Length: 135
Image (tube, rainbow, N blue to C red; front, side, top):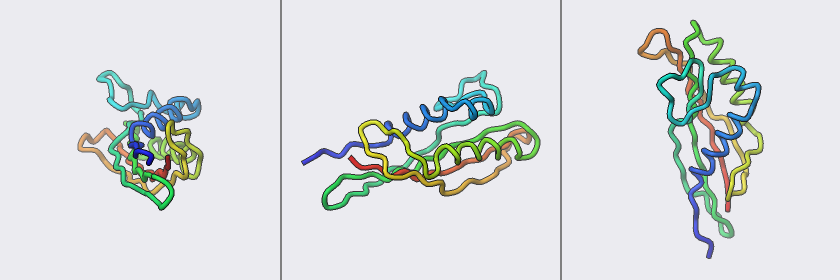
């Protein structure tokens, strides 16, 4: 019997590689981060919380992983943050994802929310994606 393998780390790496390797996105942001450096300039994208659930069938071991990405901006209003969000959705929603050690089945954009940060100069837009994989 095949042993189940968590998809979290492999999905995070796949998303990071896709986003950091995209010239259009990188022209919009200063970087894509798991841990934001102190000297990072706005705007940027961070890899956020992730949750993984089993999605097994009679003949396969699968995972459903929910990942939240965060867009951070200091531009007044939400135009800049929403432009960056649009690029994230274009890169991930219903698009193939090269996930090492797993067969990618689907990626779906679930929602985003435009938020005003406690710092009145910061705009924050979290966006959630659901990724289904199997082994």
